[in-house]
Image 1 (cartoon, one colour):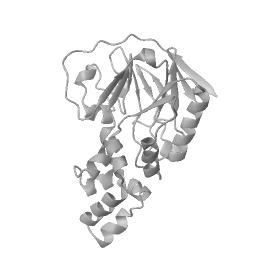
Image 2: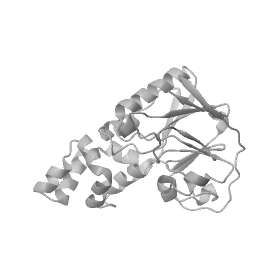
Image 3: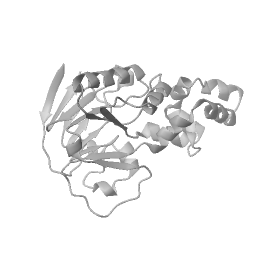
Length: 260
């Protein structure tokens, strides 16, 4: 069943010329090319739910062309992070363009793999489940060895294709007045001046105040019982790893609707 949430309209925002140099790529697409857009919430290792969500999208879209945006956090929490990343490394259907954005968990996994984050810090954050999905028993290795042994096991287990995917995930996608990010934006600040850290980690004051720009921000990162639409944002993280519900929002003709 498709449940209508709300109709919204907006004008394409004009951003300032001042900017920051982001660590990750940012993308801008022409809204005229993508009249139908689907966004998928935080996956967190829930491979079966991701496949089911993409099946719902394919059934809804039929033979038309559409854009599918995943708002990040593919690893940690759930049991099948490795399978999720492998799935995202594979091409989507010919009539679907799939863009996967970077979440804070994905960014930290890459930093761990790239030796920019210590094993202790990442494992305390959420890393054990992800390594288990690659067949690496981190607790056992650390019990009989050390972090060097763990690094060796991880280097052998994680394929280069997953590392490349994690390294190249964009932090932002803009399609007209729609802005897709993982966590949100620093309210009132032009898009060029947003830091990757805020795009992947922010909660307040964004959740309460919204973007305070003439845009609509579609994001995940903050789990909620139901998808949120209001104050210039659409929050679609419904805690799939805990609830089994992976939210998909369809945006077409100025309307946001939940596919269920």
